[in-house]
Length: 194
Figure 1 (spheres, one colour):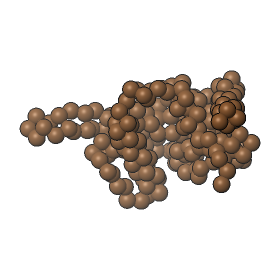
Figure 2 (spheres, helix red, strand yellow; figure 1 turned 60 degrees about the vertical axis):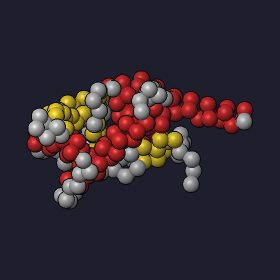
Figure 3 (cartoon, one colour; figure 1 turned 90 degrees about the horizontal axis):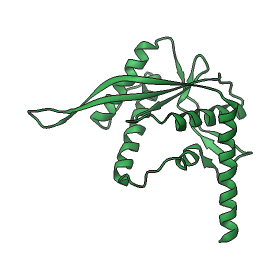
Figure 4 (cartoon, one colour; figure 1 turned 90 degrees about the vertical axis):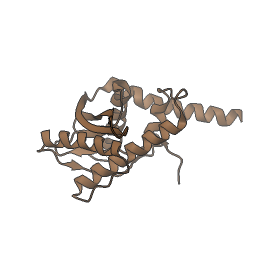
């Protein structure tokens, strides 16, 4: 199999996680994976399974979005590849309006990174012959947390999600594609030095 770079690997170059405990990052990633799987299960009218109360609260936030967006159906898209740039990524889906959609379980929105991610996915859809509109929606699923006074247990409750809308921007798309080229140039230079 060819060596592709993932969209997430390119975007990680813009984020600094060195001060965050790796176990915290791993736990957060596990919750995000569970929430994404639960959304797919829901879209397929399948039984939804949660691995934690926190994941269930995020899913509750998704259900709030779903209730407010009854006309939208979500089409799942398999992992996409671009052989020309050796790039791969997997978007969360396309709405029936052909808008890209992605679910986030982040405490803080990172609109710059999310906008770039949207553009990467739009590009991957385009090179794979899948038509997507120029409108992209990143939905930040949220929850509140408090400690029950009697049981001292942490309780998570769903909170209304926030939808961030991005529009295709040729300048952002160009920046994204240049970052992929830069990644491969740096990797090539590192191989020559070794």
